[in-house]
Picture 1 (cartoon, helix red, strand yellow):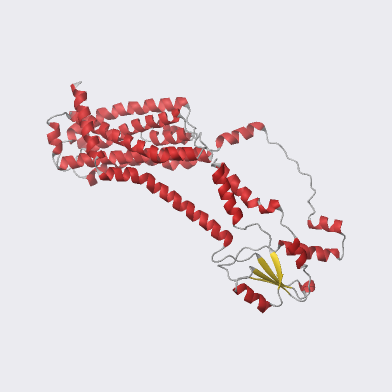
Picture 2: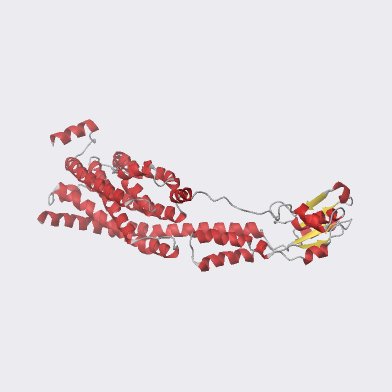
Length: 454
């Protein structure tokens, strides 16, 4: 009990020293706000870019197309009397709603986005205005009285020459000549065919009978199982990034604190009251508690509101328990290794070089994530789930994506726990040797000799 009390005292000291620093709270509170601001800025840029693309820059230009038609081939009154089909007007709004519903956003957000798209005027019918000549039409374009000017040659029936004038390439707004083309086609065809024949000529496959060949049922099920949904990828990536930030920031504080205490010789004062093993255990537990504090703040500030907003984030209690277990064990493994090898050096720069291989091994599963998106049961993902260094990151991604079977989770946690036991024995010896070591760090051969003699 006395030994545990000393470990708890060291852990409390480490926790309080870090939690009272303004830099800890700046990072803890600032990180969710930073990501929130990035999301808001990206959404605003995308929204206004889409709106600008649909409506153009500057003042609104009427949806009018001027027509110079010396041969009076186009019946403008008929064109202006046409009403655009409701299906055509709502086509883009419907596509937008389908895309947003894929994320299972609240209906109010989906409706707001589709209403904004409809309010832009995209899909409304064009009005056609007769223009006397080309120069008059150019003047109207410069004064932004219309969006385009269609000029037919006097002999259009013979040479089919026409020009479409617009203001300039940068501010030109989208126009459609579909209705004009349809009317001219019907006018020329009526000179040789009847109405029924023209309908078949313009739309020869309008009455085609459509039927489908059903794919075999097993193939459909296999395809459904292989593809990860947007929701699964989002949850898995969120789990992975949260674990990486928590573990790497916590172990970085651990390493910086250790090197700082060695340089200031505070470590020698501490060792007069506790053993090296008690000091090592207290440091790991204290900063582990600090990481849990950070995680709790992030949950309250960002993760829980995000999960409530996006109903597709189906996060259960078992999933959160699994994440917590991988975080605890992953942190203990990485912290033990970094604390052990970091004790051999006297500066933070040297410590970073010694522990770089540990950090790289921890984050390398990130590069295998694209393989799992297309094939969640890929052998690469399963292998990385059972390697102690890579297990925490790979397992939490598969856990968040709901692609980690229970037996694989249990087996990987057991392997991770056994690895921590081995790491504690080896790094405990390294810590006891290196905590009072000064001068040049030992090379691997000398370190092995020192461990063997110990």
